[in-house]
Structures are given as structure tokens and as C-alpha cells.
Image 1 (cartoon, rainbow, N blue to C red):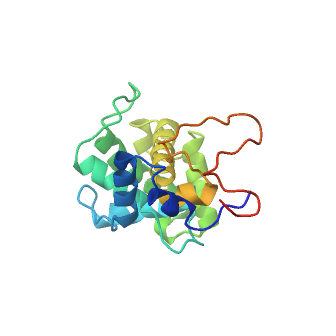
Image 2 (cartoon, rainbow, N blue to C red; image 1 turned 60 degrees about the vertical axis):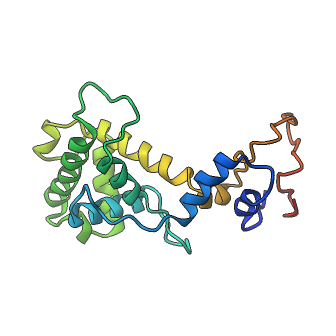
Image 3 (tube, rainbow, N blue to C red; image 1 turned 45 degrees about the vertical axis):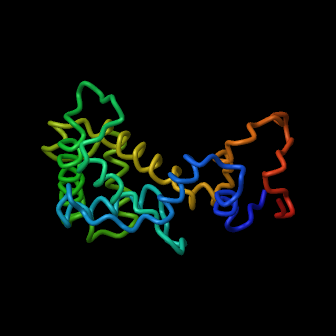
Length: 198
């Protein structure tokens, strides 16, 4: 199904969205890139490169600042309220995990991750994901658990942004009228049609 450009942005201006939802999503749209305050500039560059491999945005006019949002959360010492018992606190896990990824890149390709091709970066990240990454740091931190938590947070940051919601045609933020038409191929009036109309 084709979703017209600005579908979400248009819905945010309508009476189909509660004030609270409109405020949160409008703030996300207007939020400038967040300069690093938890990570060093080098760590933030590395995290940005990793996030671009996990969720490529090469063809996007406006990038969603996944790394900046992670940095902001860690700076504010916010948490999702749980963690694996084998994992250190979130901030420590990120610091160790980024060092571990760079260490693995150097062991596999004799260069830091930022100097590698995208194909080589994917190989390094694949070894982290499968818990086969080389390096001493992964003796202190389970690589697969770190990868899982990083990927989860990256996806949450990306798809909670109105531009990503627009990309996939998600209109669930239109939360005022509730959802009545729940059968197969039944569309609410506010949902885009196949021809691109609302």
C-alpha cells in the first residue's frame, strides 16, 4: 500500500490525535541532533556508524538521530527498567560494547570499524550478534546480549519517530476515535487507501 508523504505529519495537525500524543511526536520531529554528552565524540561517531549499519538511512532526506537519542538517555540516566543479570549497567555496557566492537574490527581487519567498508562492518557486527566476536572485552561482556540490547534500542528509537512511522504507513498515533474496523482489509477513514488518498 502506498502512503502519501506527510501522512503522519498531516494526521498530527488533525483532531484525530490527542494533545499528549501530538506534543510528543511534534517534539520528535523538531528535535535537533543531540551532541554527545555521555559518549566521547569518537564513541558517538562509532555508535552512529553502527546504527547506520543496523538501520541504514542512506536514502533519507532527514536522518533520525538514533545515536544521539541513546546518548541523551544515558546522560539522563534513564532506563527501560530491566537488564540481563549478566550485563553491567547500561552506560557501562555501551562503553564496553563499543570498545569491544572496535577491538574485534582491529583483530579481524587490522583497522578500527570506522575505517572499514560497509561489508566489513557488517561482518564484524555479525560476529558480535552470533557471540563469535574476537577480543578480550567480550570476556567481560556477552557480545550477543550487547548486540540484542543495542539493536532493540536502535529500533525503538527509529520507529518511535514520526518520519519512520510515515515510511511504513503507521497511523496508530491517530488515537482519538479508537479503532473500530479490525477485519481483514477494513480501513478506518483516516487510513490511506491504495490509490494514495485519505
